[in-house]
Amino acid sequence: MGFSLNGSAGGPVRGGSFRRRSVGALSEINVVPLVDVVLVLLIIFMLTAHVMEFGLEVQVPKVKQVRDSAEELPVVTLTRNGELYLNESPVNIHRLGEEFRRRFPGAKAVYVRADAQTIWDPIAQVISVLGEQRLDVRVVTQPADAGR
Image (cartoon, helix red, strand yellow):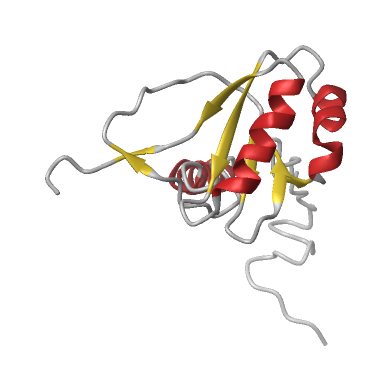
Protein backbone atom coordinates (compact mmCIF):
# COMPACT_ATOMS: atom_id res chain seq x y z
CA MET A 1 0.00 0.00 0.00
CA GLY A 2 1.45 3.36 -1.02
CA PHE A 3 0.86 6.73 0.51
CA SER A 4 1.07 10.13 -1.05
CA LEU A 5 0.71 13.62 0.30
CA ASN A 6 -1.36 16.24 -1.48
CA GLY A 7 -1.89 14.01 -4.47
CA SER A 8 1.71 14.14 -5.59
CA ALA A 9 1.78 10.53 -6.77
CA GLY A 10 -0.35 11.34 -9.80
CA GLY A 11 -3.60 10.07 -8.32
CA PRO A 12 -6.98 11.74 -8.45
CA VAL A 13 -7.03 15.24 -7.09
CA ARG A 14 -10.12 17.32 -6.34
CA GLY A 15 -13.06 15.75 -7.94
CA GLY A 16 -11.40 12.84 -9.69
CA SER A 17 -9.43 14.76 -12.33
CA PHE A 18 -5.78 14.06 -12.98
CA ARG A 19 -3.28 16.85 -12.92
CA ARG A 20 -0.05 16.52 -14.88
CA ARG A 21 3.10 18.32 -14.05
CA SER A 22 5.15 19.55 -16.91
CA VAL A 23 8.83 19.22 -16.25
CA GLY A 24 10.81 21.40 -18.65
CA ALA A 25 14.30 20.59 -19.82
CA LEU A 26 17.11 22.30 -18.01
CA SER A 27 18.28 24.74 -20.64
CA GLU A 28 20.83 26.75 -18.66
CA ILE A 29 24.35 25.64 -17.85
CA ASN A 30 25.93 26.91 -14.69
CA VAL A 31 29.28 28.39 -15.80
CA VAL A 32 30.34 29.73 -12.41
CA PRO A 33 32.37 26.61 -11.46
CA LEU A 34 34.04 26.67 -14.88
CA VAL A 35 35.00 30.33 -14.47
CA ASP A 36 36.35 29.60 -10.98
CA VAL A 37 38.57 26.79 -12.27
CA VAL A 38 39.83 28.86 -15.20
CA LEU A 39 40.71 31.79 -12.93
CA VAL A 40 42.59 29.52 -10.51
CA LEU A 41 44.54 27.99 -13.41
CA LEU A 42 45.32 31.44 -14.77
CA ILE A 43 46.70 32.54 -11.41
CA ILE A 44 48.82 29.38 -11.12
CA PHE A 45 50.29 29.86 -14.59
CA MET A 46 50.98 33.54 -13.94
CA LEU A 47 52.87 32.70 -10.76
CA THR A 48 54.91 29.86 -12.24
CA ALA A 49 55.63 31.25 -15.73
CA HIS A 50 58.76 33.12 -14.66
CA VAL A 51 60.12 30.00 -12.96
CA MET A 52 59.88 28.02 -16.20
CA GLU A 53 62.05 30.45 -18.17
CA PHE A 54 64.83 27.89 -18.55
CA GLY A 55 64.67 24.27 -17.49
CA LEU A 56 68.42 23.90 -16.91
CA GLU A 57 69.99 25.11 -13.68
CA VAL A 58 73.05 27.12 -14.64
CA GLN A 59 74.66 29.81 -12.49
CA VAL A 60 76.02 32.26 -15.06
CA PRO A 61 78.95 34.51 -14.10
CA LYS A 62 78.26 37.85 -12.43
CA VAL A 63 79.73 40.96 -14.05
CA LYS A 64 79.57 44.68 -13.26
CA GLN A 65 77.90 45.81 -16.48
CA VAL A 66 75.19 43.86 -18.24
CA ARG A 67 73.40 44.84 -21.41
CA ASP A 68 69.73 43.88 -21.44
CA SER A 69 68.48 42.09 -24.52
CA ALA A 70 64.95 40.97 -25.21
CA GLU A 71 65.68 39.16 -28.46
CA GLU A 72 64.37 35.65 -28.92
CA LEU A 73 67.45 33.68 -29.96
CA PRO A 74 68.50 30.04 -29.69
CA VAL A 75 70.39 29.21 -26.49
CA VAL A 76 73.41 26.92 -26.20
CA THR A 77 73.92 25.91 -22.56
CA LEU A 78 77.04 24.38 -21.05
CA THR A 79 76.56 22.91 -17.57
CA ARG A 80 79.13 22.57 -14.81
CA ASN A 81 79.53 18.87 -15.72
CA GLY A 82 80.36 19.73 -19.33
CA GLU A 83 76.98 18.68 -20.76
CA LEU A 84 75.96 20.66 -23.83
CA TYR A 85 72.36 21.60 -24.65
CA LEU A 86 70.76 23.34 -27.61
CA ASN A 87 67.52 24.88 -26.32
CA GLU A 88 67.25 22.24 -23.58
CA SER A 89 67.96 19.31 -25.94
CA PRO A 90 71.25 17.47 -25.35
CA VAL A 91 73.68 17.76 -28.27
CA ASN A 92 77.18 16.51 -29.02
CA ILE A 93 79.76 19.24 -29.60
CA HIS A 94 80.88 17.49 -32.81
CA ARG A 95 77.35 17.77 -34.20
CA LEU A 96 76.55 21.21 -32.72
CA GLY A 97 77.09 23.18 -35.94
CA GLU A 98 74.98 20.96 -38.20
CA GLU A 99 72.30 20.46 -35.55
CA PHE A 100 72.08 24.22 -35.05
CA ARG A 101 71.68 24.89 -38.79
CA ARG A 102 69.10 22.09 -39.09
CA ARG A 103 66.94 23.43 -36.24
CA PHE A 104 67.51 27.18 -36.79
CA PRO A 105 68.30 27.68 -40.49
CA GLY A 106 67.83 31.47 -40.56
CA ALA A 107 69.46 32.32 -37.22
CA LYS A 108 72.20 34.95 -37.26
CA ALA A 109 72.98 35.02 -33.51
CA VAL A 110 72.98 32.71 -30.52
CA TYR A 111 73.12 33.03 -26.74
CA VAL A 112 75.76 30.98 -24.92
CA ARG A 113 75.04 30.23 -21.26
CA ALA A 114 77.76 28.56 -19.24
CA ASP A 115 77.92 27.81 -15.56
CA ALA A 116 80.31 30.06 -13.65
CA GLN A 117 82.22 26.98 -12.41
CA THR A 118 82.79 25.57 -15.92
CA ILE A 119 86.39 25.49 -17.05
CA TRP A 120 87.23 27.73 -20.00
CA ASP A 121 88.27 25.09 -22.56
CA PRO A 122 84.77 23.66 -23.29
CA ILE A 123 83.34 27.19 -23.50
CA ALA A 124 86.04 28.19 -26.01
CA GLN A 125 85.31 25.05 -28.07
CA VAL A 126 81.57 25.87 -28.20
CA ILE A 127 82.25 29.49 -29.20
CA SER A 128 84.66 28.26 -31.89
CA VAL A 129 82.11 25.83 -33.37
CA LEU A 130 79.42 28.52 -33.40
CA GLY A 131 81.86 31.00 -34.95
CA GLU A 132 82.52 28.53 -37.78
CA GLN A 133 78.79 28.72 -38.53
CA ARG A 134 79.15 32.53 -38.88
CA LEU A 135 76.95 33.21 -35.86
CA ASP A 136 77.05 36.26 -33.63
CA VAL A 137 77.81 34.71 -30.21
CA ARG A 138 76.33 36.52 -27.20
CA VAL A 139 77.43 35.37 -23.76
CA VAL A 140 74.77 35.33 -21.04
CA THR A 141 75.83 36.92 -17.75
CA GLN A 142 74.16 38.14 -14.58
CA PRO A 143 74.53 41.64 -13.08
CA ALA A 144 76.66 41.85 -9.96
CA ASP A 145 75.08 43.52 -6.95
CA ALA A 146 76.18 47.14 -6.73
CA GLY A 147 76.10 47.10 -2.90
CA ARG A 148 78.77 44.41 -2.51
